[in-house]
Length: 238
Image (tube, rainbow, N blue to C red; front, side, top):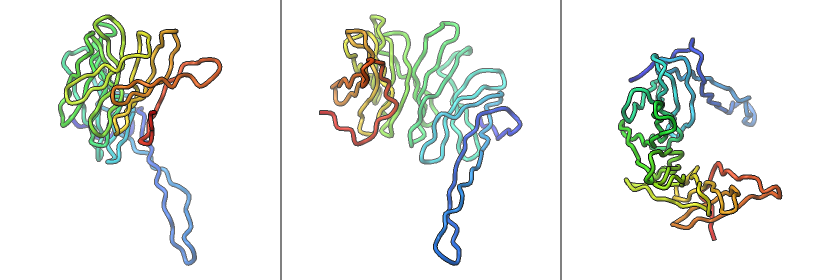
């Protein structure tokens, strides 16, 4: 489904800043940056939120529909496309990340069943259920340009563990000794950053690479929790 822009509706928008150089008789001078606000529209409802933009200018986000349902979208060249659902009527679909290939990940919550959620990957117009680590719920949080997906999932014993999904296989990344871990971000080298409970009850940040979970712990004397938000391509894990 495609929806044209609707500037009268109350929605969140994407701002694109464009800087340029004005050539005059003398040396080049930088002109003040100009800001262009683009109304992305909605999927028929009253609100929408943009959560990611890639190098192709595609935007992913979430929007309400005319019937009040919560759906995810991808916007490109003035058109907003509904990503659909994994099935069911009373569900909430929420996108969390998008890569440079226009692949979107997120989760679908089954409203009647409370906190039961299903991780999804949307690729080439098809939404795919990524499965779980043995429990009944999972959430996809990030995707890299290789199509690797990370997030968190319930296990068969009721714990929540970080996962890496690739080519149909979901791998349990383990924990730092506790019952909970979550993989938040992944770079194009396949290195994963997240956080985990420890056996002592602390919440420490970690980096996972090639089967090895490295604890980088809290960096403050108050032993406060650590929640990584990004990982670059130059990280070296010793």
